[in-house]
Amino acid sequence: MVHSLVDAKGLHLAAARSAAEDDEALLVRAAQERPEAFGKLYELHVDAVYRYLQLRTGTADAADLTQQVFLRAFASLPKYKTRGLPFSAWLFRIARNLATDHHRQRGRTPDELLPGMVQADATAAPEQAALQMETLGHLRALLRELDGEKRELLAMRFAAGLSSREIAAVVGKSEAAVKKQLTRILHTLKEKYGES
Image (tube, rainbow, N blue to C red; front, side, top):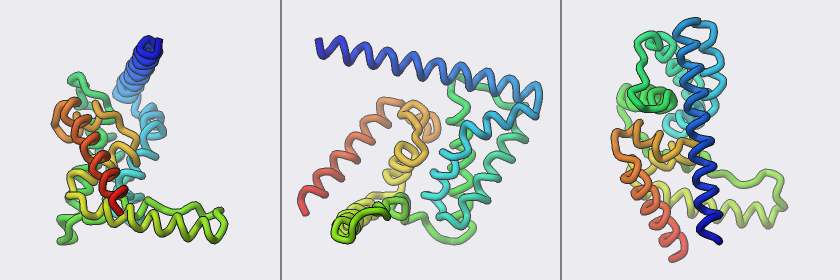
């Protein structure tokens, strides 16, 4: 019984993802034919791109870089071909490359992926807020111990909300490899968090 429910849920999610990708493909074709239709693609992806860049570069630069991502995407859209990958993967490759260039130009490495976004609930009672701050401080420290690639995978999965398939397309790995790596990262974090 449980297996049939899980299988049904998986099929439903796969069908929903396929429908979303079909809708996205229609939006891309419309934008290639009529540039004014690009606004729908922008609205669909701007929040996720911004959250990802905010984690990669910080709040001060994220808005400018987000704008650059969409300007580059708009300029390159006539040459865009799906090649079996979702448009979002292509968009996040642009964002990833811009973030990397941003850090290279500043002569530093992105050592703070994710920790700045992990924040306590501002509406919590003082005692609860203090406990949250302590817990989040510990989580930030654990995230800083991860190498940049692992933090980037977490940023794409949890801040940008990309699926394993989309992440795989962005980083040039198989979906299975991305799933396995994310599972290992989360397992390691859970173990380390439990040890302290």
